Length: 251
Ligand SMILES: C[S@@+](CC[C@H](N)C(=O)[O-])C[C@H]1O[C@@H](n2cnc3c(N)ncnc32)[C@H](O)[C@@H]1O
Image 1 (tube, protein in one colour):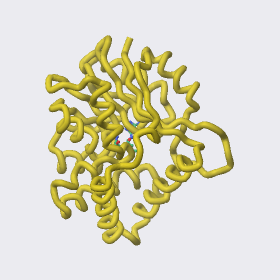
Image 2: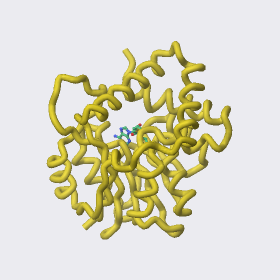
Image 3: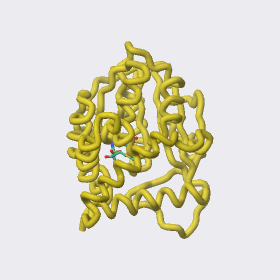
Image 4: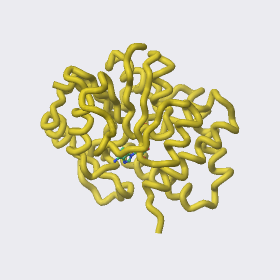
């Protein structure tokens, strides 16, 4: 029995780097955005968090590293990546060369107050200790620091299947957890308000996926990752889940 989270974020992350390398460097960032895929949402976060070239950006649950590379490209911020899956750590180092530590969000190997800006994109719902993750994010940020989140909240219960290993809070429960952890919401925007991804970006993501499918079509890990992703897609489509980006201030 395989673990769907490891299939999706370990084996497939490493394969994604292989596929991106075979397609060329212009594919690295779209290939490396696994779950936060919208460039408009990432630009919104870069602006809202007021990222500058002097900021060290901590990306928690960084995956293959595409969002961190997007931030570095658009703001010259210097990202540091934390990610628990070894395959994703290797993929991020291979594609982007950023300092990457293998660590879970619940126990970050950084001193208290050591970052002015952090973000954690599409990660909170993959852990069942969400207050613990938020407390740890607050600990590593300096007072007044910014935290960017991409989160999925559940709007209404149904009998539809949820992706294995995911825990979606309601929007009010999320607001309470954020307040209890010491964060104020400065701004937020629903992912649906950003509109569709630019055609060129979509085409590159589709080509990476086609290359992964060509190489790994019969592999169970790939099939499980595809099922996880289409389950989330369906829940978003029917309005049972809402994706949002948030700009938070550490008090
Ligand atoms: C949907 S992916 C998002 C990856 C990346 N943030 C992005 O937007 O492309 C979720 C990531 O969270 C990581 N993850 C899962 N549980 C975690 C935890 N407890 N602490 C930190 N990261 C975790 C996974 O390994 C995976 O890389």
